[in-house]
Figure 1 (tube, rainbow, N blue to C red):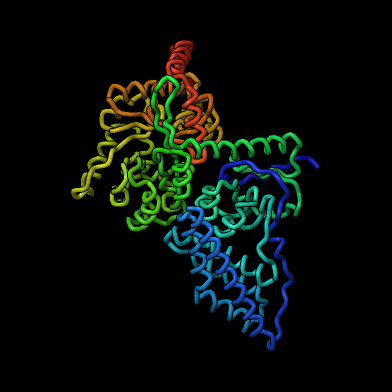
Figure 2 (figure 1 turned 90 degrees about the vertical axis):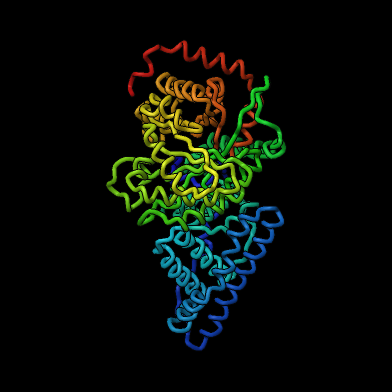
Length: 544
C-alpha cells in the first residue's frame, strides 16, 4: 500500500515517527442497560473513576511544579475542579440511576453534555475548556472500564485530548494527532511547551489508523503520513534527533548574547500566542516577545472581545515577561482570520479596528493595564499610511490616565507600506517587517506557499531594503517577525541589511541565536549589498 497523507493543522512543531496508539479505540465498549438492582454499584464505579482521575491530575500537576512548569501545572489542575463539579456528578447520577447507562457511557455522555454547554458560551476562554471536559470524561470512562494509565511510546491518535493527557503522555509519547482540537486549546498549549509535535483537525478519518501502524507525524506542516516511505521515516528520525539536540544546546547557551563573531549585537525575540510559548522562549534565551498575537483566541467570537476578556488573557502571558520586551499586536482580523461577527467586512487589521474605534479603545486599555510591568510595545497590523498610526496614538493617549505610554510600531507587510516606509517611520517608535504577507502580496502567492517563498526575490528584497533605510533615517529599530527571520539562508541577508531584531517561533529561539553567533557581520553586509547590486534595477516594480 502506498504512502497516504492526512492533512490537518499544525498545533505544535516537530516531526515524529513511530507506531500509532489509537486512544479512542482502546476504550471502545459495547453499550448495555444496567439492571435496576445493580445501578447503585454502577454509580459508585463511575464516581470512583472520577475520583481516580482527579487524583491523577493532582499528581501530574505536582510533577509539573517540581519540574518548574508552574503555568502548565495551573492548566492541568483545572481538571481537578472539573472532576468535582456537582453538575457533572448530577448528570452522571441521572444517566446511571434513571437511564441504566453503564458507568463509562454515563461519564462520557455527561462530560459531552457539559462540554456542549461550555462551547456555546460567548466567553471564548471558557468555551475553550469544552475539550478539557470531554477529555476528563474520556479518561474517567477508561478508568471505569479498567484501563489504567500506562507508558505510551508511539504517536497518540484520538478524537480530542485534554492538557492533563498531553502532560501525562509527553515524557514518552512521540507525537499527537487529533481528529478535532484547536491550535489555541489547552492541550495544544501544553504540547508546544513540552515539545510534543501535534497536528489537530485531521477529521474522523484519522481514527481509522490501525493500532501499531507505522506513521510519520509532521507537526510543522500539519500532516500525518500513513504507510510512509522508508526515506520519509529515516528523515523524520534524523529531524527528531536534531531538534532534541538543538534544544539541549539552546538551553545550555541561553545566557550567551546573540552576537556575531565580529561583535555585532542583535536581539532575538519570540513570536507567541500562549504562556507556554513565552516560557519556552525565555528558557532558550529570548530577550522578550517581538510578536504577541491577540486574535486567535477570538476567531469564533460573536462580537468584539470585552476589556475584561482581553485583560485576563494578556495578564496570564505578560506576567512571565516582567522586565522583558513585550510587543502586543493589535487584533489582526480579516482575510483568513475573520470571526463570525465580521463576516462580509472588507479590510484587515488596523483598517477594521479604525472602523470600530470603541473596540480599538477597549483593546488599548486592556494592553496598557496588563503590560504595566513589561517593556511594553504596541504593534499595529496591516498599516498602509501614517494617518493610521496617528489615529492609534490619539486613542492611546485617551486611555493612559497618567500611566507611561508604550512604544508604538507599525507592521510593514504590504508593498504600499514599504513604499511609504519613510512617512510611516516618522510617526513610529519601531518598525516590524512581516515577511510572510509581504512576500505573498509581492509575488502573488497564497498564504501557505508564502511561508517558504524566497524573501530574497528582487521584488521583495528591495522593499525590505527600503524599509531598513527609512528606519535608519528616523533613528528607530527594525524587527523581522516573519518566517524569514528563522530561515538559515535568508536570515544572514536580513542581518546584512541592518535588521536589529529577529522574532521567531519559541522553539527556534536557541537555534537562531546560535546561527547569529556563527555569522560574520561584515561578510553578511557585503553579501547583501552584492545581492542587491546584482539584481535588475527595475525588479521591485515587476509583478507587484
